[in-house]
Amino acid sequence: MMTIDELKENNLILFECISGSNAFGLNTPSSDTDIKGVFYLPKNQFYGLNYTPQINNETNDIVYYELGRYVDLLMKNNPNMLELLSTPADCVLYKHPIMDYLTIDMFLSKQCKETFAGYAIAQIKKAKGLNKKIMNPLPKEKKSVLDFCFILDGYNTISAQEWLESNNLVQQNCGLINMPHTKGMYALFYDKLGDKNYKGIVQNELSNTVSLSSIPKGEKELAYLFFNLDSYSSYCKDYIQYWDWVKKRNEERYQNNIKNTFDYDAKNMMHTIRLLQVAYEILADGKLNVRRNNRAEMLDIKAGKYTYDEILSMSDKLIEQIESAYLTSSLPDEIDKLAIENTLVKMREELYS
Image (cartoon, rainbow, N blue to C red; front, side, top):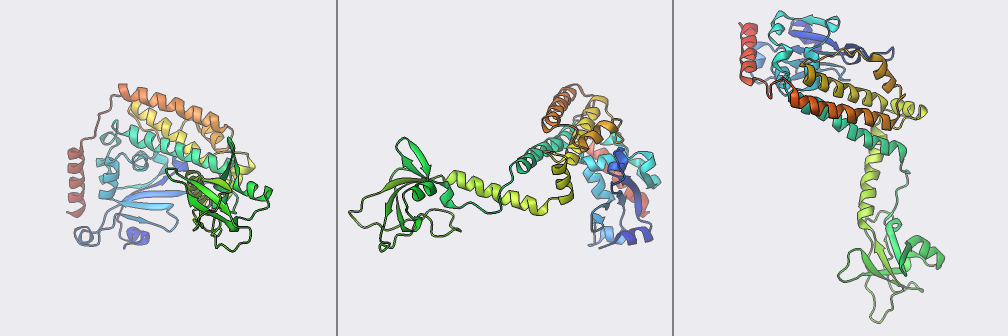
């Protein structure tokens, strides 16, 4: 596989830009400098078996897309690629004349509603999940099946652990059998001497369900137990997701959120609102404005100066505007794929002539 250095040494780069916050006009002193670009392969590699669709560095802050891959993503209305094509002139490091064949008007259509706004809405849902994680941290010690077991007490229930403690009983001496025609309901028996080989309510802390025992005939049940399997399964899913998130989260950004009492990922929501604004502008004006003219507002979002509910209200209003603009937009419903394909063929013919 080719490297970035080989692209440059062999003059294979067609387009190279500073992207991200610098292109959006939202960079701050701590912002990274991201580079995106387009390249073409030597003829023998393109026609042979060594096709390379993308080349990037280890941190993915420098990424180059092979010409065909780039055009394919443009045709799919990929927001990153459309913004790359519309990069402000002061962020363009190099542009081969052949790239003039590709213009933004060829790729803008009503499909942008789904790609720009659809992605942003997905991020809002993600932010709600993050909000839940930040506001409701889960203890490292995982709950057990026993925490989701309850004893019937007249018209009420009490936790199995509370019931055991109040009656000076141990769960290891309990025996359970299924109750016919019920879900999660068990008759509970107790072995005071511990010589009947009952298996307990749970065999160990790693158990993911209650244990069933063989109960001698004539034994009298002591109580009825309900195991809330649905609640336990939901808890296990949330526990796994939460601690996986803790393991993978950007600790610096998370601590910044906590320090500033954010209850959402402020940087992510800034870009979410930006995407919604761009989606509206595309549908309403037929233009893609990469450089934002509301820098102060965007940086205030990033700084956490808006509450979580204010951010959601802002996004809801933008989504309504997008839906309205979509109905009256002068953009085509779809792009002219054949014309774009012919343009790509023409570009390759010139490159390989």
